[in-house]
Length: 449
Image 1 (tube, one colour):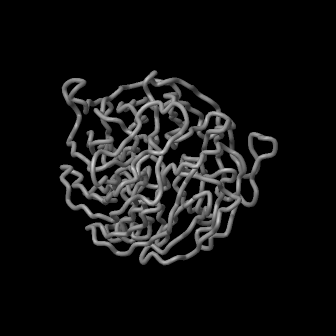
Image 2 (cartoon, helix red, strand yellow):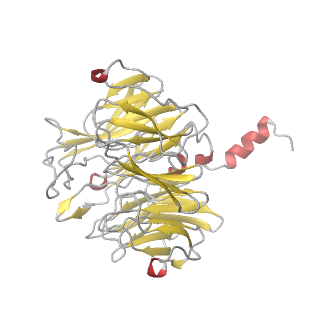
Image 3 (cartoon, helix red, strand yellow):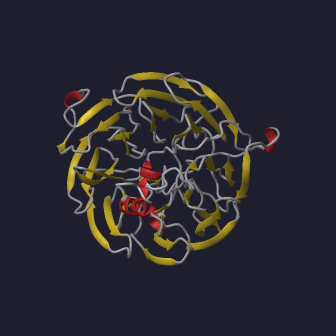
């Protein structure tokens, strides 16, 4: 049948949102399909956004962002959406650089406003601002975290912001509140310190999945996106003591599942019922990176506590798929490595390789289909990667805490194409839309293109 315009519209209407405009929209944490890749347009490799470091170049626009947040921008059509936590008085504290000593909570417990911001994609002008909640925080946060760590998500009609203990809010794209929910206090703690909530919401059709791994009451839940009603909730007591990763919703011929990183178990749940599909034991005891799909497989990593594994799982896995004696693979696991994974940053698969960034500035590259280690190199003595890696146009972008963005040439050879100044610390993962990079620093939202 010839592909007439009418036939094209019929085909397009049957496709999931993430298959449409994948290069144009960046609708959630790490973009369409949570894969961190946006090809199809040329993307700038070199720029300077720091006037103190020389003449500014490559910056389309820069706008100040109120408050403090590590949440990433998302892009839908001609708008950018970004949440933040705005302190009632004074500047929110943030410890940049090596913390040293024992972990501590930030002294940031006075009244805050949790806001949702909308900007024009072309100019950066603020279109609207909504206050979701105004109150003292219900849980503390780590001195390197914020009260707004999570990224929003949209499927083109509903705009979802989840601030953990501060509530769940669903807007339309013009900022009208459709519904809200209070899921109670979600205190992700360790060493007796509330480290802050960090798991972004995930959408699939009319399903919204949230991961709330408070050690006292860990659970995963699915809500109806249209009205916020509960569909199912499953306790993760005995399955996970804490986690910060965003749940992955993966649809394949074997079914649709919600996959949650965790410790001591990584677990998959049936999206319709919440029934457990498979589980995998082991990993780092602070699971932060988010699972994602590439090559038709599910990639999962974590680190801390002596282990830093990488697991590549087949979507038709069932039951306990833990490999015996740390074997390299089994019928459910394509390949694994018990060393080499990342602690905070989610890696990216681009072409034939998977790239990992680490807080010590080291990047690692493996063959994405076999697990063969390709290289391990340090970006610079100053680099510290907290943001997740993204890729486009033959380049891998590594955003460093110190405000530099390192651009690597994709491929088996370690090559730094450029080191670009942003002018302020960077923790948030950038978004990419039609060849433009959108960075959130601790001070600004910046478009580079």
